[in-house]
Image (cartoon, rainbow, N blue to C red):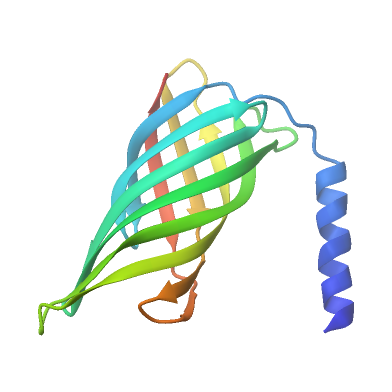
Length: 158
């Protein structure tokens, strides 16, 4: 286990050392996020390759429904040889509500989130798409790890 940890750590340092970072070619973007939960996403770059991604989403299943607000701090890095394409990682948190349908009871949802994804800005068009994985460590109402947070965001840039 220790060897695996050191291997992952060394690989991460190599990736970061070989990545040239520049400001993204848009400042703000707003649009939809589609996946396990659907909603609205707003991304804004604060400085250079640093951005905030704010997501309001909902999910409706046979047994429960949720509404969540997520704030993610992301660090973007260029993908060599692919203009407009960047990969990003980061973390943040989520707060929201659960409502169980059979009993009509509700509860507060709180989680710590991570994010890893790809971001592409089309040249000459105000369109941005992002594909990411947003795993979460749920703190309430249950404690557990949710690895199902895949999503596709389509945004208008300005």
